[in-house]
Image (tube, rainbow, N blue to C red; front, side, top):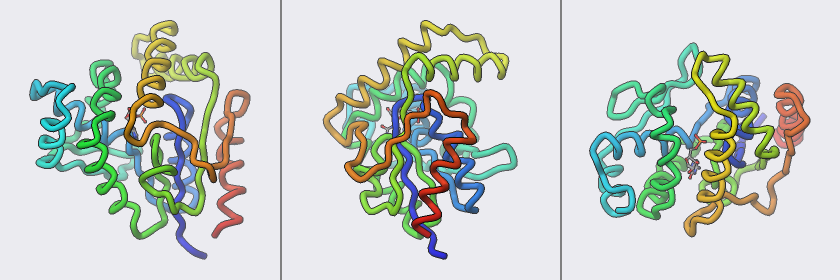
Length: 222
Ligand code: C5P
């Protein structure tokens, strides 16, 4: 059985990380959340008062930054220069600024190299926006997950309430739509389905059904 690379891309809150984690766990593969990497550098830039319009400054900041993803008992933990930022990178401040940081070519080039190194040995499930098109164009399996914005906002809303966070559905809808717009319209490696990606519309599917659909495609390739 060979260890393949699985790329999972799609718009915000389409269920990528949830399904990617489950697929990785079934296969005993490594799960790599590339969004967490972009969130980490955004968090650091905000902490340091870096101008988010300044791609060069952001690139320099990133060059001196260590981002580590560790699989813990409760899922994946994210370390920024040795400090656990797993929760800090999920705040509204980070969420609402990350697309602005991620659009700069200086940031994307550095991140792409890091992500390619993490995936080099295979046996990985990597989720993001440009994995199938740019980071791992040779991935054996590419999945493009999507769902209507209304459904995605509802799912995120339910998730927030379950975690005990305050949440506003209309706000979420706006935030998700705006992030998708920025991620799709940027010049460098925008959010886009790779030509050879398999599209799965999860609007009317359960998580379990999505995982099964992906696994059926994995079986054909290992
Ligand atoms: O996946 P998540 O929603 O945490 O990603 C946060 C943001 O990071 C995205 O909205 C996008 O701006 C950026 N991102 C990216 N390329 C990736 C993964 C995430 O530009 N491969």
